[in-house]
Length: 135
Image (cartoon, rainbow, N blue to C red; front, side, top):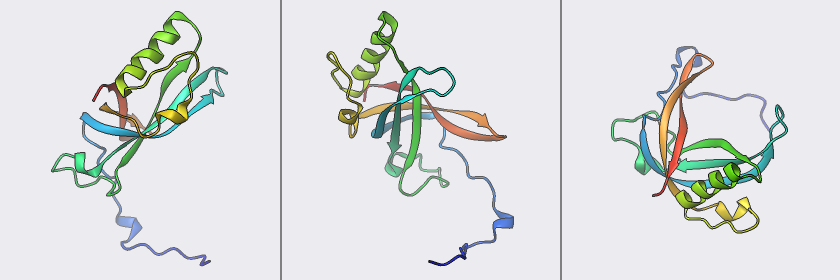
């Protein structure tokens, strides 16, 4: 294993890539797991959606040629009226049925449309999933 990594271009002249433009894109769930928040101790559903490069706008040239994978960590899991409703809304959007238990592994490979917005993080704009809607 080499201890040297060579770049194809000078890193000193590198510029930040443009984030995925705001819009709605078809996406596939490529990762799904239940995690526990370090801050609150709440359990949440951690999803990752992959947007195919075929879905990029024609003028978007900075996208990953393998597709953009974006996290969605906004669904707190709680056994309450609100919690069950939020899970139902997500399940409806991805075409998934939840009975008495939720196995996130069964969500992998399902598709939905993701509404992409942009926010600033560490001084740079980045794409983020704002909403998940049925395909």
